[in-house]
Length: 227
Image 1: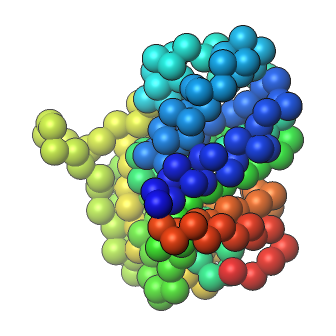
Image 2 (image 1 turned 45 degrees about the horizontal axis):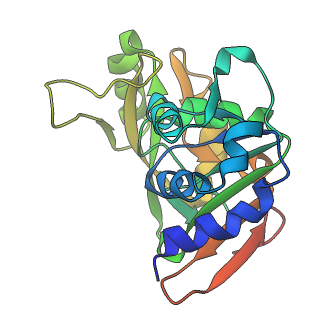
C-alpha cells in the first residue's frame, strides 16, 4: 500500500466541507492533489492557495481554482507534508525550498494539518535545518554561524552553477542543529540581519500531524502530544 495515497485519501475527510484550502509543497502533496482531482465538486466550489509556484502549476493542471498569496485570504485549513518530525513533535520543512511561503500559510490558516510517512519520524541528535537568506547576506550569515560552531552549507542545484534560489529570490543555507535546540535556534537565527525564515516548525504552528506506513497503519498526533 502506498502510504502517500493512504494519507491523501485519509486527509480528504478534513477537506470536503472547506471553501478555502491552503496547500503545501512536495511529493506527498502532489499525491494529495492527484486524489483531490477525483472530487469534481472541489473544482467548482473550492479556492486553493499554494505555498509554491510548483504547487500552483500542479493545482491548475488538475483544474482547480488557484488564488494568489497576494490576495491575503486566510485558508480555513492548510495541508502540507514535512521532511522530518522529531520525537518531541518539532517538524523540519524546506527540502523543496518553499519554507517561507509554507510557514506564512501555516501561520495565517485557521487549522493546520501535516501529513507524512512514519519513516520521517527521526530520533537523531543533529538535524539539517534549511534557512532562507537574502542573497546579499549569504556569506555574512554563513561566516557568522560557522564562528558560532555550526556546520553550514550553501544549497546548490545540479542544473546550474551556484546556489538554489527560492520562489522569493533568496538563497537557502542548510545548517546542522542539535535536535533539542531547534526552537531556540529558530528564535536566535532571526536576530541576524538578512535571515528571512527557517524550516523549523514548532508546536504552535500546527494542530495535527498524521502519520502512515505501507502496512496501512495511520496515527494522528496533536501539538500537545509527544511522538
